[in-house]
Image 1: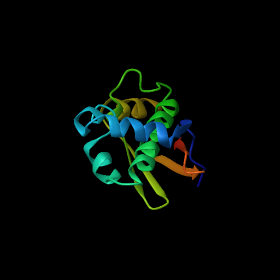
Image 2 (image 1 turned 120 degrees about the horizontal axis):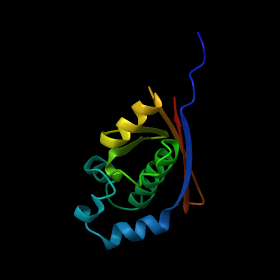
Image 3 (image 1 turned 30 degrees about the horizontal axis):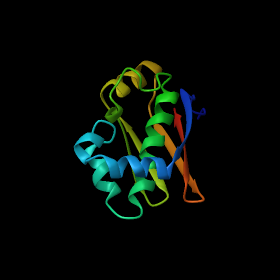
Image 4 (image 1 turned 90 degrees about the horizontal axis):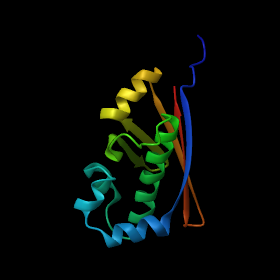
Length: 127
């Protein structure tokens, strides 16, 4: 069996306090221009909300870089990320999915890390 072909790689770092401040400033209907309903529900409330949303934000940026479009020409909600403990899944929909098909993407792999409770790093690999 041959190794999968890498179709794209993207990495992004997001500031937890900065994303948290935006989440506090705007209601979910405004945040819905960037985050999906599922991402907002999964982020919940309380102390972990800012970190969860920062991971989602960084995942969108990293996916955009991996797709070589940086999300400039598509809705941010076309990339959705869900954290399950240490695992991160990223789904492409709409224009992001079409761009992935153009690149021959069959799978999206993602990982994340947090340090000092102020920054998250997300890595997205398209195969």
